[in-house]
Image (cartoon, rainbow, N blue to C red; front, side, top):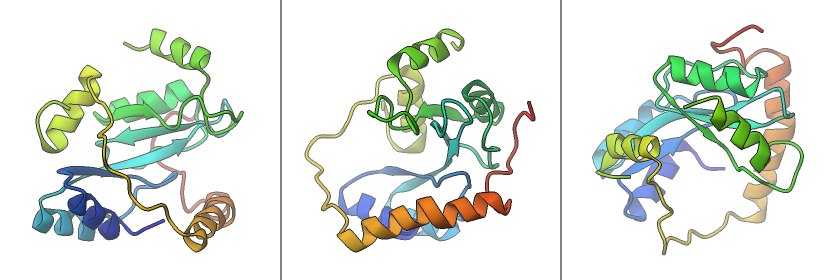
Length: 178
């Protein structure tokens, strides 16, 4: 709903030292955001929110990756493709009360059975995620986006991005062709 540079500026204003920037089924160009972050003291972590094939539309966030992950793979293959790049795989918005775009606790437990923020900056974030010691930062309450921005996000997600996927402009990254 905002540009990567605007996100970096908001992170700096909130006193954050690191921010992860992702988009659905593509890795955005973050050169300007990385430069802005360097000026403002905010490290930028590159990532992608990958749409899996089953459960329908489940999203897995890949952090610390440089190459786009192919969409519509199984959750397991998506996680493997992220790990193949040395990235971290995180279930996006788990346990949402919808069938799509979420993962049930039972499905997550099954995934974890098949797989085996301390410090500062991107390295600290990665270490904390790997050690499972992250927790939310209390006290940050950003103003929610206005109706126009929310509608623009929905239009982008449901119409523009769907068209980009159908025409092969996004979602064709690396990963298993199973």
